[in-house]
Image 1: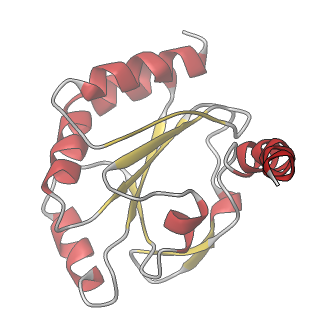
Image 2: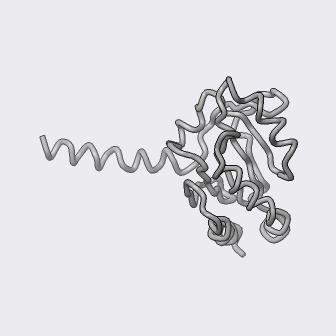
Length: 163
């Protein structure tokens, strides 16, 4: 039995790693109600930050605000784009657009009210941030937020951009 479990783990591990090496194709909703497949996300070969957040998550809002303070410089130096995916459910997703409009956040926003993308990427707690390189590969991820985490993220963005 032990050998069977070890063999199963060896067979399943590469499949799991492969499954999470790219953003999967999942249909999300834009803030204006359009359905958007994540496979259409692109940034002309430059890095993309995919950040999972919610209106009720204080660390999420702190992270997005901290990045917003530096985002124009990051874009100028690396061409990075940030896509923020709200996991607010059907009861709270109506709060997302008014909240975003009240912030100085220059990101693209999408809603994942059923948690389809969240489940596909094994996001268990938020904030959870993925960095995707210009080839569409997930090259870095972290969850939770502490002040200064954005600096480590930016170092990874520069590496992904070849800077």
